[in-house]
Length: 559
Image (cartoon, rainbow, N blue to C red):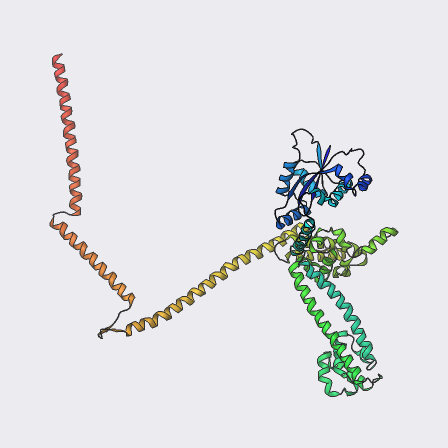
């Protein structure tokens, strides 16, 4: 059986014929050793056909199709023209070797050409790639490298530009930054506490919050200068007057050492940086919430924005998360514990990142595993809805959250939850009702806007007409009388036309009367004509009957 090899280069499609190969003696090691030698390899593999690409854009389209495992029309025409034709009802006496198994399966489905992709074919393709410039005669040195470089740049640029998951990158970067900011703010605030405690150690026990501690440290600076005048400012910062008084009393009897002005300036600047980081963290959290509501609203409504963003970032994208089964999503983030349990034959973990959800914490100890499994199931449904639904709605996420709440009640109190089918039907109905309301509201708003525009236009027209009419009345023609408005002129013209029509009708009636013709007379004359016609027909019929009688009498007399 002959073996043809398809090689997709940056300059075009090429088809090679590998002859002189015994199927029994196909050894990859022998081929691997003979690939480097062109003389030996050239005797086995020869160029059968070559089809260059028309342009760089055509090369990019062909490369995209090959990477996706699709056969283009150009590749199909090239294969059908160069390969031997397959007779109906007979097995083909050749096979096609390719590097991409997906492309081979698609070619086999469409054209019925048998394809194969194995180590032997890959080794032959490696030799073709190594000596490709020797097989093409008119190929100049350096042209192939330029074509490969240009195609590589355009392919990578197109992949980055048309990345389906590029919107998820914002969420992934935001959640990574949020986690690093939490660690950094925590460590920096501990450093502020430790640094300022040398000067005012009693403040640590009074103010527990890191952000408030940095604010108070920046406001107080030198404890020896703290007095009752600073009470309103401390009350605004701490939010409690008793706590502000406690700070002032503690500053008076503090055991801390004095710091130089330069040290206090450094502490103050560092406290400002920590405060700025904390404020930026709040803004970043708001940004993450807004992004999650745009990208995965149902997942955010079900499990929360932060946990949903962590799931997306750990999976790599929303599409990858939607592809994950619920069992994988359940232990997502606990891979080390899973493989350790498999290695030591211990108990596998029950939950990963979804442990941070409030539902797992609210469940009892014996129901945490079941709750994690149920929540992972609902999270996989929500992620698939967000990934493949075109509309941006939170109806499904809210209904799934209600289901999880009902499941918690079922585990605790034994209350039977609703069926999943009924819940999904109600969610679809809510989405449809919202769509219909939106469709009804839009034309109503458009009509109201049009009506308001018309009213404004009419009001403006009236305002314009009134001064125009006044101006026209004020104008005097020939110094005698003012001109009449156009509307009155039109009315007078219509009245004149009516009068003229009535006069014409009266004249026509008078003329008809003078001629002795009337409408009633005309009808009477018509009736008289009909009567006379009827009488004539009766006379004719009577005369014909008389003639018949005379003939009969004559015939009787003759007899």
